[in-house]
Amino acid sequence: MSDKMRNLIVRTISGVVLLGIVLGAAFGGPYAYGSFLLLIVVVGMWEFYNIAAATGAVPHRTLGLAAGIVLFVTSFFLFHGFVSMPQSESAVDMLIGGILYFAALIPLCFIVELFHESETPLRNVATTLMGIFYVAFPMSLMLFIPVLITGEWKPEAFLFYLFIVWGNDVFAYLTGIAIGKHKMSPRISPKKSWEGFAGGIVGAIAMGAVGSIVVGGSLGMWLGLAAVVAITSVFGDLVESMFKREAGIKDSGKIMPGHGGILDRFDALLISSPFAFVYLIGASFLLQL
Image (tube, rainbow, N blue to C red; front, side, top):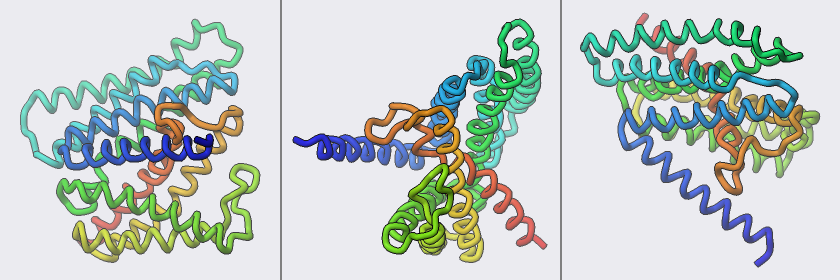
């Protein structure tokens, strides 16, 4: 068996396993969904800190991971409130405690650096905080996006968000191969073209239209969401490529054989989810006027 065929088999098996995990996360309920995103937070932050270390920085992994987890878990309590509307005092106490704990962890990164005796304190603190806001923050917002799309928890809403991202990738790839001539960012990603970028938007919008039928909700809202996600997810891929290029590495990790790391698979969500969140909040506000 050739190496090319072996790699194809490995990629296919990994892809099937990943699809099973995604489906389990979606249809397993809010806690399964939250656990899946938390996995992305923990592994994704660890991979980012590895990338940062490869550039010469010394991020505070433990503090960064702790702050990222606290941020996400605190956000999950808010998300769970949207889904089940809990009124217990213990839930409110844990929410307030999480916010306070997170607020203390951020300045603690600066204090710890005083005793680190490193020659790159600014870079160390900066990359520590970047791990939180590059990975944990957008995944915390991603908790709410399926609920904002339909007003209630529907696993199909999360799946179609991913389908929009994947539809954008597939159409961009096919369009780029067919007619791609004008390079989008040759220094960072020589294969991406503006023609592929436009084709990806068309594919994403088509998937958004399907989402409005399958999941429900306003067609205009879905088309707008698809356009926002398509445009911003491309930059998610470019941003991660920019980081890896500086670090001199090909993949962010090896957790998924044939596919690389968590950041390699979900980099589009890291940049697209904050924009999607803002768009959905704005759309919801306008519909109430």
